[in-house]
Image (cartoon, rainbow, N blue to C red; front, side, top):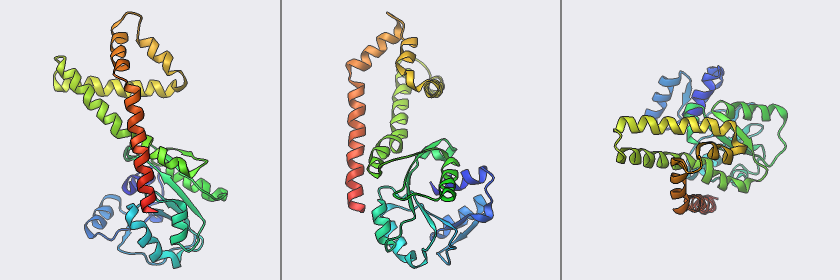
Length: 257
């Protein structure tokens, strides 16, 4: 995700001289320097007061990292993308520091088509709010949440969501092959169908039932296919999947915090 953010910022013509990366792994450090031509350090040195600290680390690494740099944190803005780590934990590990924004991007950030959920307990100065939104918009779109507890639902929906789509697409392709299409034909037809339908749905997100009706003519092939999806309780299966992911997110979050 850190690489996606760096790539997105550079694509938005952000000044590469203003991006610093801390990466302890030697091979990753060399790779980042080579790919992005930015400054990469092996460890934290001095952190300027006007810098934005982006926590792009694994949840289990967050406490050790924050405690190690807590004495350098004074006026910086902290943007955390550490999954499951609550703001109250970041405050605790930084000796009560408050200037914190928590975020949950998703993997589509890799192609700058992600969606990022943002939350802060504080009222951000306009300059900081604009900076956070610029970073988030470099990898796609963003929304601000009004309650941090919604992050578990975000994790289950947009965080895990791409995998659900990939799973459906894989099954869709397998079905097409079973009907006699070649693998290449099936992959092309299914992937482009989902892509095109996604664009149509985005344009008419409030009228999805109308979109369904416009394809499913009375007594036609689409109606017959939809009957099978309904009889197999697709809605219920999806609800169970997202609920399971939501509960797992809450469980992991309680462990990390």
